Every structure is written in C-alpha cells, then in structure tokens.
Amino acid sequence: MLSVPFIRENFERVKTALAKRNKDFEPMLRQVLELDDKRRALKTETDRLLAEMNRLSKEIGQFYKSGEAKKAETLKAKTAALKEQSKSLAAELQNTEDALRELLLQIPNVPHPSVPAGRNEEDNETVFSWGEKPELGENPLPHWELAKKYDIIDFELGNKITGAGFPVYKGKGARLQRALINFFLDRNTAAGYLETQPPHLINEASGYGTGQLPDKEGQMYHIEKDNLYLIPTAEVPVTNFYRDVILDEKDFPVKNTAYTPCFRREAGSWGAHVRGLNRLHQFDKVEIVRIEHPERSYAALDEMVEHVKGLLQALELPFRIVRLCGGDLGFTSALTYDFEVWSAAQKRWLEVSSVSNFETFQANRLKLRFRDKDNRKHLAHTLNGSALALPRVVAALLENNQTAEGIRIPEALQSYTGFALID
Image (cartoon, rainbow, N blue to C red; front, side):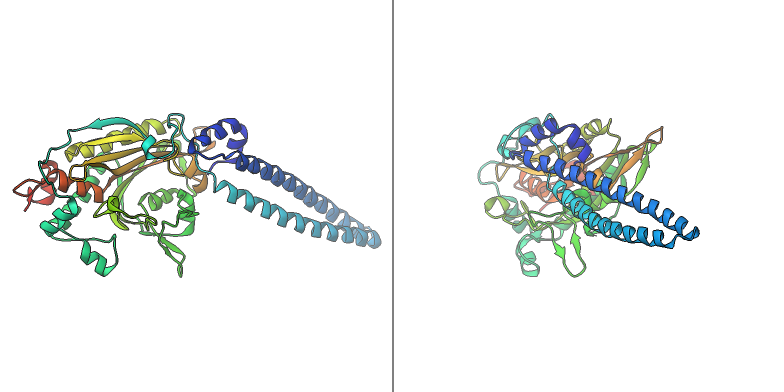
C-alpha cells in the first residue's frame, strides 16, 4: 500500500509511473489527498475540543472548591455540549480514515523506472535466454499424453475425486514431484535461505498484509464459516511471519524458503493452453522470500534472479527471462521478472517463476519496519520468487526429454529420483 506522505511528496512521479499500468489513477490520487486533508482537519478540531474539555474540567473543579457551584454547573453544561460535538467529530474522523484506507487499498504499487510500457504479455521485454530448444522429431507427445502412456499422472482420477485441475500423481510421477521439491529446497538452503513450514490457510489480516485481499478477481478459495483462505502461494504466510515486526538493521538479509501446495480458483481460465499441467487449481511450489534493507533490495533481486537461473540450468531446461510491462505487472509489484521454459511438444513458453521486488508496498500494509543505527524506524523492502513452481517444470521435463526408450531424467535430479528413466 502506498503511503499518503509518499503520494503527497511525489505526486507527479507517482501519477506518471502508474500510467504505465494503462489506467488513469490521477482522480484516485487526488481523492487520497483530499481525504487526508479532511482527516487532518478533523483530527486538529478533535484535539482542540479535547484540550478545551480538559481545561474546562479543571475550572469546574476549582469552582466547586471555591464554593461557586453555579459557575461550575454552567461549565458542566458547556462541557456536555462539547462532548457531543466531539463524539460527532470522532465518528466523522473514523469514517474518513476508513474511506481513505479503502481507497489506498485499490491503488497498485508504483512501477520501477525500468518497467517497460505495454498493455499485456505480448509487450513484455525478453532480457535473457539460455539453452537450445530440443529437436524431438515427428509427432512428439505433449505431457498429458506422456503422463497417460507411462501412467505417472492421472487427470481423470483427479477429476473424479475433486474436479478438473486436481491431478493425481502416481509411481514415478509422484517420486518426480518429491524429488523436485527436495532438489529445490536443498539448493535454496545451500544459498542461505532458512527452510520453514508455514500453515496452508491464512486469516484476513495476512491476506491484506501481502496484497491478496481485497480479492477483486475472486481467485482465492474462501472458507466462509471460519473466514480463512487457502494460500495461493507460500509467499503469503511466510512474508506474514514479519507482520507487525520491527527488525534491527543488522538482521538483514532475512531469507526464507518454503514448500507448500498452492490453491487458486483460476476463474475464467479455459482452452487448450490450460490443458494438462498448464494450469491447475492445486499445485506444488517452493518459494523464496527476502526481507531487505531498501538500499540493497535491487541487488537482492538480481541475486534471486541468478539463483533461479541456476536451478533451471541444472535441470537442463531451455528458458528465457522477461521483464513484465506495466500492463502485465502484478498489483503489488514494483518490478517482476518472469522465467519461462520451452515446452518442446507444445512449442510454446511456459511460465515457471516470477521474481519480484515489492519495495515498501507490502511492508506498509504489514507494518514491517527496521531500526537503523540511530534508532530511527523505516519500512523494509520485501521480495519473493518461485524457486520453483512444479507443474510446468514437470510438463517441460517430460516433453523435452522424451526418447524412444522413455523419458530421461536430468543428471542433477537422478540422485533425488533414484532412477534415470521413466519407462
């Protein structure tokens, strides 16, 4: 969430940067300043009334002591009127503060200067690519057919048990899932990330803290009776470890990793591009989360990008990195790099990771701060990345490594799977 002082002090810059998101936010920004002006005026008047009531209370006590009860009663009547006025002002102040907060919750993060202009994913900027696209010969099988051929993923059984988008992994398919999770966690912990196991459900405060709430797109699964939400990513509970926390400057960097299942309704998704593992309602993902000093957060983002590069290179998957344009940038992000692997049978790129810097946007919602050496408090920067999301990694591994003998397992993964071939 953007802070009011930041908007007030950088109005033109904020307005211009938000225009990259292909919407005119100027009316909302001006309304924020108007509501804040009203809030400050109401607060000033409320404080003045309270000071006046305190002064009158002292005078009333003095009049009673000196035997001037009539004067005391007159002032008591005046104090009662001020109390009613103060209650009315307090209610108006609360309503204004609520309206201001609701408005601020609707304004997205300010894009970093390097974010390119653009309307959608077609306008994203490719900044890096690696690996050669494999040549599979004639009629290569897409992963959903390979899954059926080798009996490693059962989409129909998952549909029977729950519905579309909830596959069942079997045999070497289940072992491949487990191997990837352990491989990613081991690589992450070796890079200094502390492994954690967070809850898979969150409360409203956690959803608001990282920006998933208010859920305008209806993508979160909500358990209404308990008012809890199934997590869309481990980013949410892990970042909320630090809600209402004040760190010391010496604590940086704070680095966490976690494996969790993820749950997304994916409302409005259909068509061939979501077939098989391409888009699921439940999937596994290993996440990395960092809390950083503002002066180091973009260096940390570069480190995270390099780390994810290493994971995909170890898996021998051709990939590219794209910098998201303003129209494709997530609500909470200032800068995001997407990693996309090449799907040889589908002949298209599949997103497997997003690595993002949120700057102070989440920290302001979370009240996540740090003390500097002079004991002054500042908002921290938050970052996160998928390292990695499994479904499309598995899809690319199956498709790119299919041979006449079976599906080859990359060498770096064989000690985790316990086999070199799915046959």
